[in-house]
Amino acid sequence: MDGTSGNALRIQLTQHGRCYELAARQLTDGRLAIEVNGSDADGAPVAALSGSLPVSDLSLLVDLIKLMRARGGQAGEGQISVVEQQRLAHAEAHRGWTDEQDERLRRLACQPDASVKTLAVALLRSEGAIRSRLRRLRIDELPRETHIEGDQRSLASCDPV
Image (cartoon, rainbow, N blue to C red; front, side, top):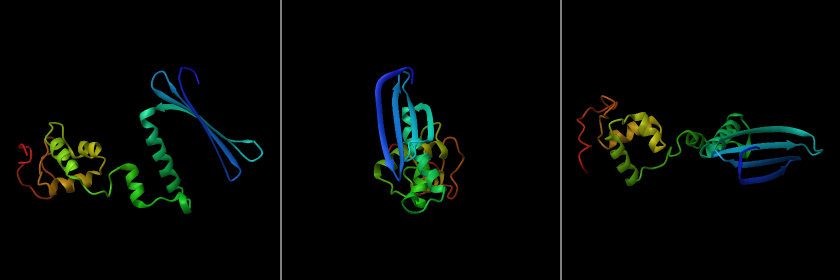
């Protein structure tokens, strides 16, 4: 892997007669170069993957692999619950709202570019969860949207709290 900055990691896992080795190195441009090689019990190659990605996307790749495994219908410990699957898309799915999260939602809802979609991304929730919480907090309009589905009260929540 060319252009590495010296930060390298190599790990190996052997299970059920298969041996997998993962090598990862941080590149000078901030990306992570990854190589995965797998072999069977006789040492014959069974897998080879390589590529690079932004370091910040590594957890996204892990979540993608978990989701792919779950959708592959593998039984036992490989299956993940519906809630866990939803949390792969929205990390805060099915978690209670804290006072701090409510305050952040109120603050973000007052921003000129606020929309249900931008709030969902910022708060790691689904758009439906954001709409529901906005109704509960009596925030019925966002700057980029005419009204939130359901109640249609006036927008008073952008006043200082």
